[in-house]
View 1 (spheres, rainbow, N blue to C red):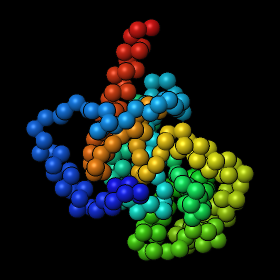
View 2 (view 1 turned 180 degrees about the horizontal axis):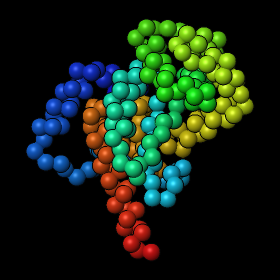
View 3 (view 1 turned 30 degrees about the vertical axis):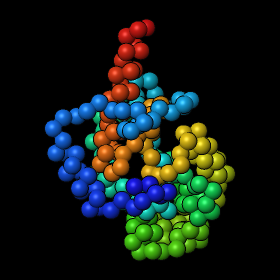
View 4 (view 1 turned 180 degrees about the vertical axis):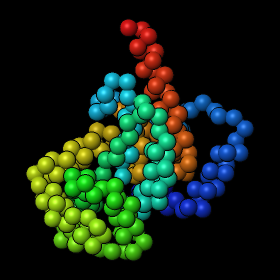
Length: 219
């Protein structure tokens, strides 16, 4: 389920979901098996009272493409005290670095919601070679986006800074494979299936919430 390991198929995800639902009780999480603590913990951009959850991903990662509809559905049901955001990684691969810029450019041009899932589909189902700015801009225009705004953003100094910051964040969070889910700047969720990954993320959210309440009560 990560781009540096084995492929997670939809069938495997369904089997994982069935296995999870068949469990008679929810067991406590085990560090090392269900999650790892991030040392040192990282600052988050979440305002007070909010729990930040980050998905590290790449449009170039086939596992992230399979994970996309699942994590999108999951994110739509998150409680109000959870702030979910995505950080594209480059892993020093030129094509993936260009796709990092594409993510931020789509975000800046206002076309991310419209074209986010479509870009995964174009790369992994249609096998389109969208790894350079001209091809990406042409594709954006053909799919209802603003190609001029995309190009202006893609080549901007601001997008360059966002890409550098994303790379720094992936290093600070010790990201070696994707998709990866990080919670509250303190925990990295584990899971052999996408279902378990999201279930463990949910548990880490609950853990971070309980820790915040305990810390607040001690003040």
